[in-house]
Image 1 (cartoon, one colour):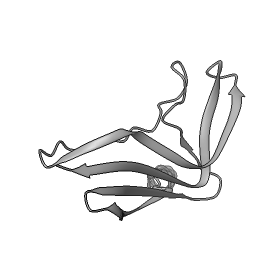
Image 2: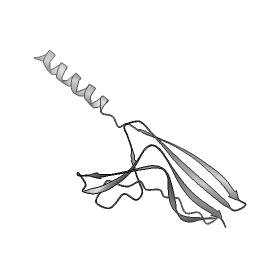
Image 3: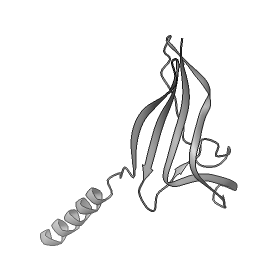
Length: 116
């Protein structure tokens, strides 16, 4: 009975270790100077095969959309909304009952920033 209990405990522990959260998205960042006071800030998500990230414009009632936020800085102003550059996939998801918008492989989020 001891051996069986030990075996069950071992299997449960191995299963718990295997179920650790994966991080299937790698982020990289860079900025591109447009002119003396304007920059593009790029936040690039590289997504592992079989995974995806949702668009910022995924409709209400669906999965949680990607959210990009910047810390307020009195020396900068953000121009417009953060743009998404990548191959947008859209399909009806019966689980949510809405058209889900998502990206696979890679998406670049771009924000225009102006120096005051």
